[in-house]
Image 1 (cartoon, helix red, strand yellow):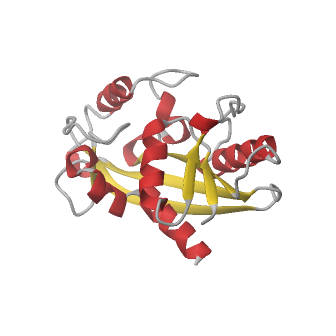
Image 2: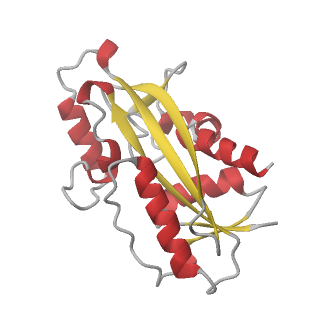
Length: 202
């Protein structure tokens, strides 16, 4: 079974990816590599950030660990009425140059959409995965997933993380935070990107 490192310090994100991929890979996270460099996510797109993270971590790891692949993820929320914001700034939407607590990001989003009617609150979660084989950092494969939905008028649910309490996916009446991990892992933007990754390996 190939060994894959998820290049993320976001424990929630790493757990979500590992839960979906665990049957296909021996999964590790950056928690096992505390000395790994912090990658500055200054790209203008999810793809640019994911590729940068994957290649920089792979270059640092090469010959240091018995791993086969590095997988990096960049993802976020794009709201139609806000011209695609918060986009690549999703994690730091309320924090300027640094990441902000989920509650602060959600509160800012609700303020920005305070005067937007339900029918105009369309949004999508987007995810781009970048895969690098150790020793072949110049070769990067990317996989994208998109989950359409809408932003609710108020937060609901205790599960998930990030904007999950506000995002209601199409064909559902409950938020990601209410639907639970099993449903989310079947329909989310990240699940769709990971399904493409699995198909690539098949």
